[in-house]
Image (cartoon, rainbow, N blue to C red; front, top):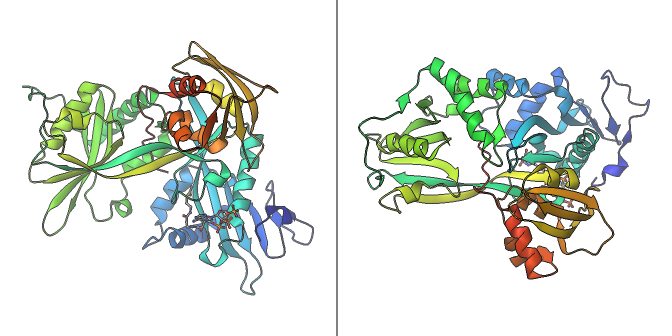
Length: 430
Ligand SMILES: CC(=O)SCCNC(=O)CCNC(=O)[C@H](O)C(C)(C)COP(=O)(O)OP(=O)(O)OC[C@H]1O[C@@H](n2cnc3c(N)ncnc32)[C@H](O)[C@@H]1OP(=O)(O)O
């Protein structure tokens, strides 16, 4: 069953007690929005799909549910068995806020907790659920959608492109010394619970305002982070918070029989000085030989150290994927670094967002309109989504033969236009 078209609106044959929800069904499968009673099955299915040792406990489940509406959760049940309906698939989205280059904040759906039972894979259930959600987002006139991907091979077919990257680094503290001499006074202190609640959300918000790709956190996200549930610690310590007037860092201690590691959970610096001051404290932690952290790919820490090799990059991950749903609205929402005149031909094989667009940038602002003029640039919607926040460059996709430009000048203008002062960094896993 790979064609969602074989589903049809529910007939009278399948009476339902769910109101205001679209129900589609074929002989075996029924898709609808979730209700309260679906959650035990959703939690059990996601534990299997994401290979958890234990399903999420009641607190973790309540945290997730506090961040979304049941009407934003799609469930697919297989009703063919004699034992009753079996949950075959689930997909949901958070209503999130993202900072675009230039500082505009946009609201957008963040697709999450997508899973299909191992017994029902490769029958088109993921495609069915995503089609259903895209139809909703298009009705709601969302210009974008984002997600964090479990695998890199799943979402390009739906027009998503990797848009933010981060480096996992391991820092050898025996080698890590800042070039800047230690000042007599440090503005960094360990915060108590009240100080954390009072200061950290504001500091994060200041950082998110100036950071392309940053996910802005609402109060419910903070409640979950501050709760620091035992289950999510996985044997590590509670979070320690270091606070600076212009930033903060949180970390956990992970200890085995031989050694201890400080795992930086978040590092948020609004100013360069805060970045230096916070790292000075972290690098000075005694009795801990190593620190691990996830950082932006252009983080200045290695350049601030006397020994460039003290941090080792152990991995680079595609931390957030973006999908442009409305090309003109998306292109006009951000600012640009270079004037451009181009005709963009965008291919979208999954939905209808593609077409040919006259794209003009003057003094940082874009105007976009549909056109019949010949294309000067061609690319897939997933490629446009990948270069949109500045995580990838147009020239990189051109070199990979995934973006075509009529001439070198057009390519260079496009490349320069999408550049951002800093690489996008989402900062929140969801
Ligand atoms: C945003 C997030 O939540 S990311 C988390 C995604 N979930 C997981 O990784 C949990 C474990 N995996 C699963 O639950 C399932 O295997 C899923 C959700 C990834 C796929 O569900 P399925 O119902 O099998 O996918 P479906 O049959 O609809 O496939 C749709 C298309 O994606 C392809 N596809 C599906 N899974 C994968 C994969 N893991 N790798 C590569 N391609 C894939 C299919 O081949 C199909 O291609 P086509 O339509 O272009 O021919």
